[in-house]
Each structure stands twice: as structure tokens, then as C-alpha cells.
Image (tube, rainbow, N blue to C red; front, side):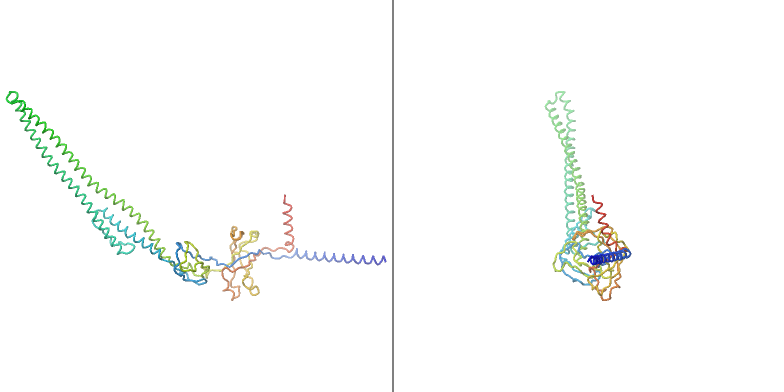
Length: 435
């Protein structure tokens, strides 16, 4: 009985020992293989196919109303081909208003220049040109010529009136001078008569009243002579003032002309700039394709639709540019990605059974992370070039911008064991550094 129990116990222990040995051998073999075998690592990233030079936005600087749509979504267009036509009513009316103002101010400037130069007629140079309708300009010029003649006539009339005033004052001066000479002659005669009368009065031959009467006449004539002299001097002053008014009339009209001419010239300069801008706006009524390609993401579909200034109306995807892949690299793995690195590319839109993996090369890597405002996640942008000819012929033309891609950026080789050990060692390192 005891021998039988000992035999059973030894059998169990032998099985346990054998199993332990086998497990140890298995772990030893697997561990040795894991430590000795290396496999290539990869950073997985999502990406999409894009055109290397990027799509071109179609915008209109001033905006406005859509008058005509000339293309549809997906159409192929040539460089410079009209895509849509904006309504030209307002730009054309604005240009017409500016041209009419230019005509009016140009004619006014010519009149002012003629007035400044003392000319009676507006004379145009041989090579003179004006923006807008020539008939309207000729009509405006005739109106300004009429105004110039009226201003010249008014000026001449004022000068004539002043000259007549001077002539009248001179005539009055002539009469006053004659009166003054007459009074002086009478005074001289009375003075001579007084000499004789004084002698006779001393001899009692004439009464004293006779002497006093002559002296009164002499004093009266002397006073009247002084008044006449003052009147003559006053007339001279009036003549000087009137002649100064004629000079001032010329100066005032010239100053007024120069001031108005300066204002008109400034307005003309401003209008010339507005005219250039209005013509440019009218020239851009037709929105043209910036380059050859395909129309995508149209936002304007209605005739009469409103386009805001600078609004993107559609995109033009270039057809001749090389297709590349833009991949978003997680910042945690950016240390394993570098320019010149290799990557395997898969296009998830194609069947994985018939579509081979393509080999791509990273030729551009952003220097800093970019924040995606939609997802709130940061990423580094890697641009990869690949050989499109490696795809099957029937798939090459189906590869279009916007198609998603899976990118596996190759990293350095690591042992299988490190994939199991590294997470544990990293966790232990963080654990022992905690305070």
C-alpha cells in the first residue's frame, strides 16, 4: 500500500517537473528568438492625395451679382477661360458717372487756364484727348467758353466803370483847378486895389468901410481858394483809389482763378485714379480661370446670387501638376520621422487585393506643429512623393486629389523583445520619478 502511494506521488512530481522544464524551454526559446530577431518599426499616419502646387481659389475682388455661370462642377477649363460673368450694371454706371465728371472738370480747367493766361478763347492742343464721349466734352467746352466770355465781359464792364469814374473825377478836378485859378486872380486884383485904397484912406479921401469891404472880399477869396485846393487834393486821392481798385480787380480775379484751378486739378487727379479703378473693375466682369484644371467645390449655383468681396466661389485643381501625399504626423512620433525617410502608402479607396503598396519618400516636413481647429489636435505636416506609374494602369487616372491614404513611415529596426520590455521600463521609469 505504501509502495503504491509512493509510486503515484513520484509520477505526479515527474509530470510537474517535465511540464516546468518544457515551459522553461519554451520561454527560453521564445525569449532567445525575441531578443535575437529584429523587425522594422513604422509610424502610422493618415493622409490624402493633393496637388503639389495646391488648388487655386477663384475669387472676385469687389464682389457683386452673378449674371451668368459658364462652367459646372467637374468641368475641365483652360487657363484664362471665363468661369462666370458678374453683373456689369453698377460698374458700368459708376464708370459713366466718373467719365461725365471728368468731362465737366476738364472743360472747367481749360476755362480757368485761359482766364489765368489772359486769353479770350479756350484753345486745345493738337494731341489733346479726353476720357469719355467727345460730343459731351464739346458741349461742356462750349458752355465753359460762354462762361469765359461772360466773365471777360463782366471784368471789362467793371474796368470801364472804374475808368469812367476816373475820367469824371479828372473832369471835376479840371473845373476845381479853373475855379482855384480864378479865385487866385481875383485875390491878386483885390490885393493890388487894397494898396491904393489904404493910401487914400490915410488921406481921408475914401471911407474906412471901403477898406473893410475889400479886406472881407480878400479873406473870402482866400478861404474859397483853400477849399478848392483841398477839393483838388481829395479828387487826386479818389483817382488813386479808383486806379488801385482796377489793379485789385485784376489781382482778385487772378487769385480766385488760381484757387479754383488748384481745387479742380486736385479733383481731376482723384477722378483719374477712380477712373482707372472703375475701368479695371469693368474689365474683371468676366472671372477667368487662373490656370488649367478641373472645377471643384463651387459655392455659386444661382444666377443673381450675391458674391461678397474676396469670397471663394470655386476651386481649380491643376491637372498637370504632380500628385503628392500630405500626411499628418502625431507630435509624439515626430522624433522618428525625418526628411528623406521612406514610407509605405496604401490608398483605402482602392481594393487592397489588387492595389499594391507604393513606396514614398518624405521630401518636406513642417518645422512646427499645426493645430487643427476642427478637431483640436496638433500635427506635423509631411509631404511625400511617390511613383504614380507603380499603380495598375486602370487605377492611375482614378487617383485624384482629396483621396485618403494610409501612410506607414519606416523607422529603425527593433528586437521583438523590446516591444514587450520598453512599455514596462518606461512605466517603471515614470513610477520611480514620481514625488
